[in-house]
Length: 334
Length: 105
Image 1 (cartoon, rainbow over the protein chains, first blue to last red):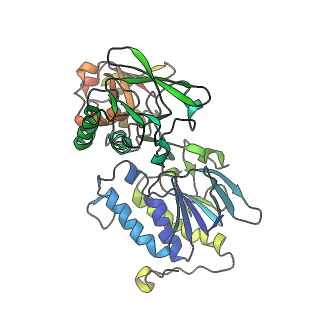
Image 2 (cartoon, rainbow over the protein chains, first blue to last red):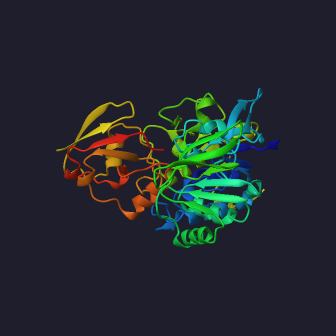
Image 3 (cartoon, chains in turn red, orange):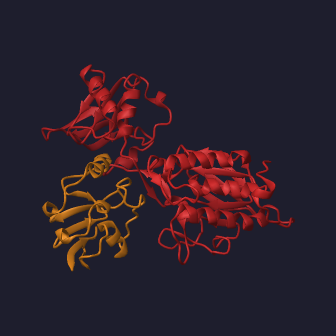
């Protein structure tokens, strides 16, 4: 079990900056994020896009802002659990919370901060009726360990960069790899597309263009994948694995099940300290709502600062908080 | 006024009227009309949460740009009627169009 002062759900810009504000008050933090990397939507959706409204930066790329935030909080040595989704939050009698992820990571904390942005990024799924019954039984949407495909038959569907990149990477790993793409061409990185065409010409992969996935079947475990090809003929191939790669889309996820009040997929908070209806749980950044709420990174930073002042009493109930400027005292790590 | 119709997944159609000088994207108008559209990326054609299908009037709209087509291409399903509402300006070209929302990802 991981023990920390504050557990922060969501490692986007606001969750990251919360580590800094908590750190100034000597509170340690552990961050959990469903994505395998920090930065939230800045890293996942628009890393190369410039942002113009971060004070002090006339223009900064989203990815660079995340790198800078990581540097800024490094002195406070936050813990990270990445690529895991928080599934349950329970209150401990006598104070504090226990947070559990889908991979059974357990985090004990005195205060909980939800900086979940728009919720969990979840994979976009093709509309195939029985898809769910093979999830984890041959169908996966994330590739964590490429070795599971070694000497197996694998079908990848999708035409974006991740479908191309994984096809190139796994061509020599899988016994047989088939890439199914709806269109005739790839709009992803031209270099990657060219490599994929080369692999197909060399007979190292099967490339099915103008082809759409239509069904999956198997007896308890995936054994075959069917599709409709460019000639409008329905065919099927035997396969051990199917990896649909159609990008990620935000969904509220399990946050709705933790006893928190919700208003249209957002958590109402008290603007005095961004506390929720449950004492000890705070919500900051795009996930919260209050009169006049603006979904801006800078608003999230402000919310993080006020949250930390308030969370202090859950972490150090016997101490009195005195506010100090970093310009006077510097950033004193633990 | 610009008048067009919006159809929700339950098949209900509602007429939306906006002033011609509104100068907003269709995504912004749909959000302002209380449709549940996340528009995570805020209108950069990067998240596809404002996905719509143009049931009628597609031919009158400006062509899809490369940025929009790139995003549509990554979705599990998209077709000749697929659009990202954030990439459609609300102009008189939208007059009498019928848009289906809520079938996207």
